[in-house]
Every structure is written in C-alpha cells, then in structure tokens.
Image 1 (cartoon, protein in one colour):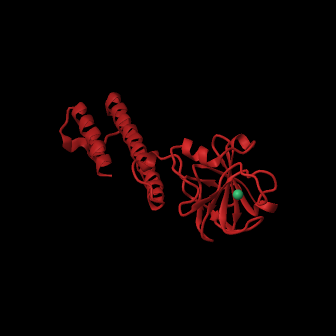
Image 2: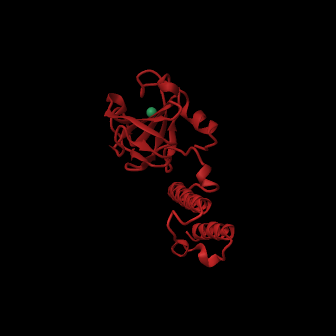
Image 3: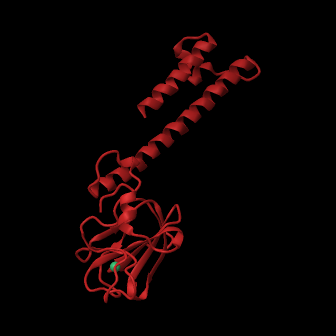
Length: 220
Ligand SMILES: [Zn+2]
C-alpha cells in the first residue's frame, strides 16, 4: 500500500510541476476554480492525473489479490511436503502417506479382468487431493469401484479416485492443486483401505498411473 501511495504522490508532484506550481498545489482542494475561469488544458491535465491514479490503484489491488492467491496455494503445497518454487508447481501426487500395493495391468483373481489403475495402500481416512487444477465431474457409488470421484483436469484427462470412505468434494466443484478430494476407504470391491487411482486421457482407456505421474516429474 505504501508503494501505491508513493506512486500516486509522484504522479501528483509531476502534475504540479506541469502546472508550474510547487508541490503544495498538488492537493486538489488548493487548485480549485470554476470551469469558466480555468485553463481548459489544466482541467484536462487534472482529469488525466485522476484517471492515472485510478488505473494505478486498480493495478496494485490486482497485484495484491494475485499475491494472496499465490500465497494460499504455496501454503497448501508446503503443508503437503513440497518445497522449491511452489507457485510454479503444476502437479502433486494424489496421496502423500501410502505404499504402492498393486500396479497397472496386473491380472489375477482380485480383478474382474485386468487391473485398470494403481493401488496406493494407506490408513483409512488418509487425505486424497487434487493432482492439479480441475473440476469434479462425478461423485457416486460405482459398484466395484465403491465411492468414486471423477476429477477432470483442464486438458480433459479424467482421474478416478476409488474405494473412498468419504468423498469431500461435490460434483461441479472447481478445485485447485492440492485441495481435498476425499478420504481413503475400502468401499466396493476392496480387500483393505487403499486408493485405486485411474488415469484416463480424454475420458478414454486407462493408462499406467505411475508412468503418468512420473512423466509429470513426480516420484510415486
Ligand atoms: Zn486397484
């Protein structure tokens, strides 16, 4: 706020110099006069100064809001254990206290055909978070998937968070990176608490979530 005052004061002083007066005349009340008796160019200059002040105020307000948003985002990512240039971080893991318990593409008696996601074993109630900015497009009980949240990233990639104890974000919600999606559970076809996580580019066939996370620079 001090910077804004300083810039506004500078504008006023510049205007005062342009009027051929000292800085004291920078206070608007001291250069009052009727429109009829004043030089039109002086009135125009005053108007320009006023408009520039308004523009500067808007610019500094926008910069402050941007800094606040970035600060909240950085604090959230720091709380998840991330370090470095946090405002530039675009992806995080969907879960942060886990052990990988089953990979993508496995076959066997546990799965109806082929394992279409990766399993992150974790304690019941462990937080699940948004991998990136996106939108919750579906929250429902989905048979063998149990409580499932479908979270769609801005590029159309669907992320499926399955077997949740409790979904925390509602369909239609816009979430930022690291915001809560739900809690780990064991609903649906599950033998213990874990996140079954699927990655479906464009909402199509699933790909290996671990390889996908690694391609984003993460280390699952
Ligand atoms: Zn699974």
